[in-house]
Amino acid sequence: MGFLVTTLIFIVVGIIAALCARICCNKGPSTNLLHLTLVMTATVCCWMMWAIVYIAQMNPLIVPILSETE
Image (cartoon, rainbow, N blue to C red; front, side):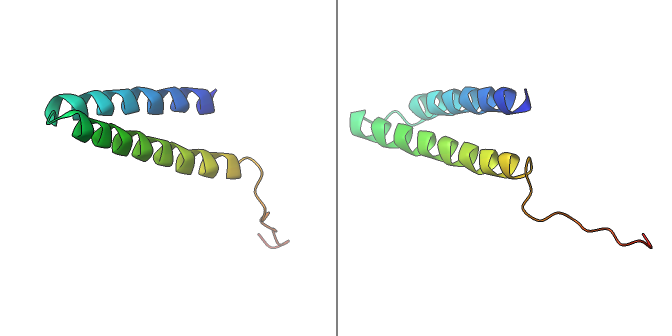
């Protein structure tokens, strides 16, 4: 549930950021395409970083070993 909800949040934030870039930086078709590409790339990269960290915590490679005194 958490993975899906946060993925949807990233999609919404990406769409809002793309609209803001289109409205605020409207200088021409090639510039709009560049800004849209940069915003979408940044959104996907941030989502991938979050997803990798989230999935890595589901099955950790290193398991803590508790000693008898603790």
